[in-house]
Image (cartoon, rainbow, N blue to C red; front, side, top):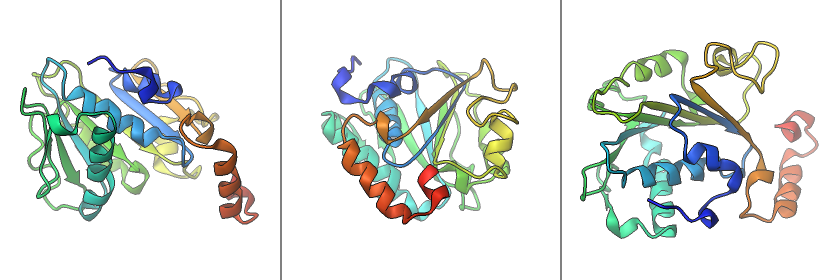
Length: 221
């Protein structure tokens, strides 16, 4: 599908059009990074090739009010809602014209990898709530021979220096560079509220300062 540039903040264009094996998107609240993933994967449902995304939450109970609700909201905003089927019982989203689908998965489910056959992409928002073991178990499932491309996207707010995400994906000395193991196979994208063209940035900055209540580390985050 052809996407009007007014539908997204321009700094997120690399994410929306990425076919990289990994997408590592991190940044502060209000940046609109999560909405960019909603948009990206809703559009993927209309591609002429097979596409099946697992969208992941650490807690299955949060899927309905977080990602599923977000996909609905963005689909309505860009005029795709009536072209898709939204299953309020199990939170699947399917394009009936070609069978492409978005499948939810909670990582607190004892059978957390069941039903994830032939997936071509995974997106885990707030992956900082998960573990490296969770990531590896999901990553091993990305092997479908039907895939036009395979992709594991992760998005999260800033994490501490001791978090496994920092050690696994990033350079040991620079938190804004990729670990050498991912150079060439991953898109690294950092964003702040200044990358969101759809909010009053000055007003939002004032809100962030108010919420920080003088806590220097919280203000930096």
